[in-house]
Length: 252
View 1 (cartoon, rainbow, N blue to C red):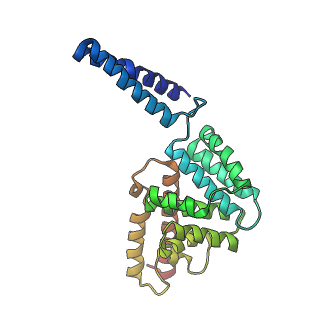
View 2: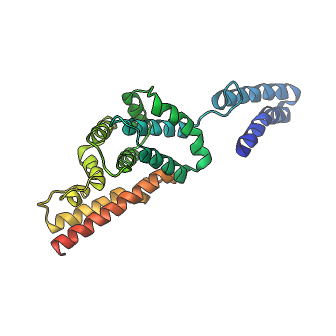
View 3: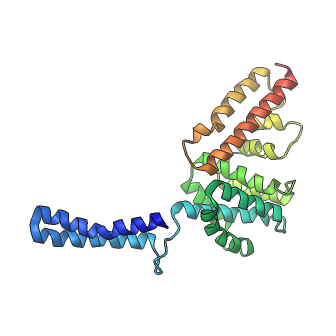
């Protein structure tokens, strides 16, 4: 609230600052012109950032968070039930990454979305594809798998829905199978995480590990967003664990 108050006051001063600058160069006519220009800038700001009730609207970041929560709702409802553990996973995730105050604001919309899905999957995924990098979309798939696994297992309908979302987000099949293997443990999960096959040589394993370390290292994202960094760290650890598993298996 304090930051919005300061921004509002600074915006209010724009027309007076513009008037002063205009007066400095062109005396009284310049002051009038400066004031008019400043007023126009002020109006543009308010139309862009405030609604009719003088409440600050969602930023682009918050809009994407709401869409993220909507995708979470789609996955939670995929198996025909709303599991409390999956809901709690989403809540804890957002509070830990964005703080309680900011999370509470978008949970209000999330609660509506979980009861009444009013946006198509295609519309939401198209928005992510157009407005986010590939690395960010990989983090999104990781987040959705985390939700599905929150109740202890990933059901077939949940897996199908996440796969559909990944396809719409243009995630390639190898990357998808790698992230899936981090949550669905099978005999060859370590190979899948490193994006190689069971017949890979020791040199292939080492090479794959180096590639995956670069791919999922948190520094690769070049962001301070806690959601992205946390997901990258989790996948980075999974890659390291997979490599250690194969090292022990092949004794190198």
